[in-house]
Length: 281
Ligand code: GLN
Image 1 (tube, rainbow, N blue to C red):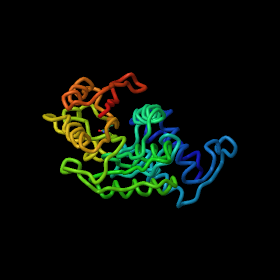
Image 2 (image 1 turned 135 degrees about the horizontal axis):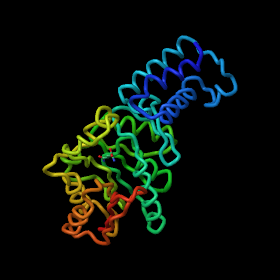
Image 3 (image 1 turned 90 degrees about the vertical axis):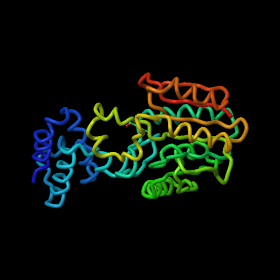
Image 4 (image 1 turned 60 degrees about the vertical axis):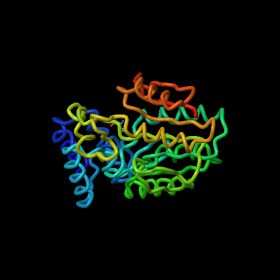
């Protein structure tokens, strides 16, 4: 079959779900992945033919995209902080705003001695692993309640040649930790069920709800639990840092203030939304 015909069928089949530019960007990613060809192959060889097996792969991907499966899950990986991370349905796809959290932490870590870092609810491991990459001397521990997520995080650390410790634990049922840390960081579930209505189907229908949702009644549940745990397990002067729901900036600051954290900061992401809260013990 001609690759140009596959391209045409992508544009026609997906045109009700995505805009044309987006469809083309999916198609070109898949050309690179499935054919190991450059994305401009059709400019050089307009009659480029693909074999049956390859056609099958494109058809499968087309069906998946039609049902809003994220392209990152189809490819099986994504880029975050210029590192490659495996992703699958048991971990969230790393977001650009989470890169802003890393940029922020990187600037903070340049100014302080950090030896031990704990990333709670690590998922793919993108936060802890990027920090290990930025601060190689630090010992980084990745915690998650999901064994599948932790396995993915482990693969990601190996793939990037970085050594981390893995902790299988449910933070909501954790009363103490084996170590004390200089930085505890977390991007816990923070989307309320009532926000489901405005969520896109690629997120709502395909990303792990365990990693996304928290009850409408207690949206700061994870923040309170982690902040309390961190009071006992951060070294004096150590830093606690969260990614937050943009709707709860002030509330998260108030929570940390109540728990007697110092130098509390609320920082915007690249989209101008309240996204990061940090504090010092
Ligand atoms: N930022 C993610 C989203 O918008 C949610 C991450 C989280 O719940 N921790 O889907």
